Amino acid sequence: MKRSSIGGRVLAAALGFAMLGPTAFAAAPARSAEATVMIDNFTFNPSRLTVKAGTTVTWNNEDDIPHTVAASAKAFKSKALDTGDKFSFTFATPGQYEYFCSLHPHMTGTIVVEAMTGSNGAQ
Image (cartoon, rainbow, N blue to C red; front, side, top):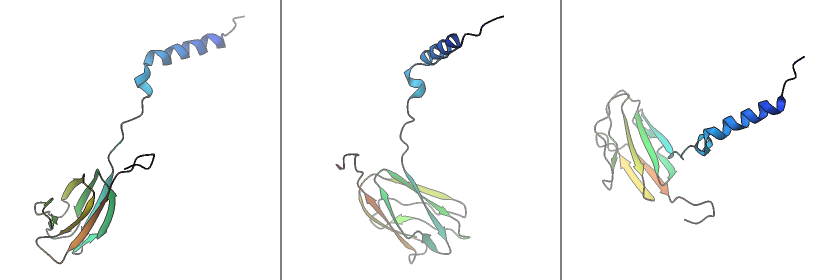
C-alpha cells in the first residue's frame, strides 16, 4: 500500500509559488478615473459634473446631429462630433471649467475639478 505524502505536496506547492517571484502578486497600477457626459437632445448630461484632478472626461454624441465641446476659457475644444463620435479631455488642474457647443451656443455645461487628497487628508 502506497502512502500519499500531503506534506510533500504542500512543499511542492510552496516552492512553485516561491518560483513565481514577488512581482507575480503585485497590485495592478492605479487607473486614472474616468467620467462620461452624454450629448443628446441638444443637452449635455449631466450638465454639471464634479471630478477629481487627473480624471478623463469623455463626451459621447448620441444626438442625430453634430455637436462640439469647447471650453469657454479655451482649455480644450473638440472637432465637430458626428453621431457616435467621442471626445476626451483629462483634467489635471483643479478649477471650474465652463463649456458649450460652438454650433449650438445655448448648450452649456460645467466640469468642476477638485484637488486630489491623500490618504492622510493632505492635499
